[in-house]
Length: 194
Image (tube, rainbow, N blue to C red; front, side):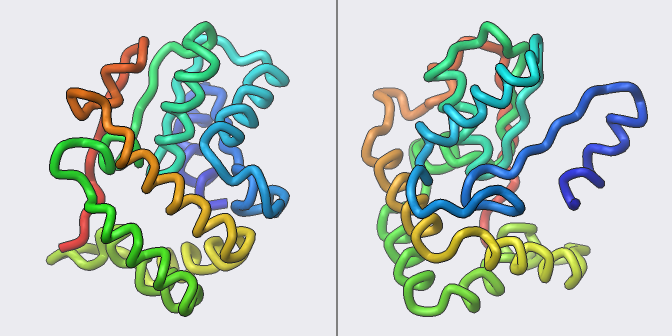
């Protein structure tokens, strides 16, 4: 619902806007396997094919940015006009000076120890609510928590962190995965705890 509310202004101006819940998230199926970028990218490819999308602008935030980048890496840009990566996993985690592996290990340990409390606390830096002057409603943070709690349990979350750990270990020689994408890419970095 939140995604649709954010897409509605574009749809009202005549754009065809599609938001999907990836496996293990939102209203999608909650399998205990396939929670990795290759499967996310293949699922996205199946959706793009089924809807016969062409010249699409793919926008991905956080893990969704990793999904978009992996989709382009695995399936090419034949159906992609542009990509927008917003605080996306690939550049945020693998850039020089990116998130240390130890922080990912701490996040994983926190999820395993108390998943509900982890997502409640993580909503603050995720939305920037921990920044001075931020105006992030408690309702939005509660919605984030609910979506995370409905999102397939501990395994998808810890699998994602294991995957992010691999991304950090496989930095490109120049530290920029965006240069590997063969279409127009805009990256926006807005996520970082204060």
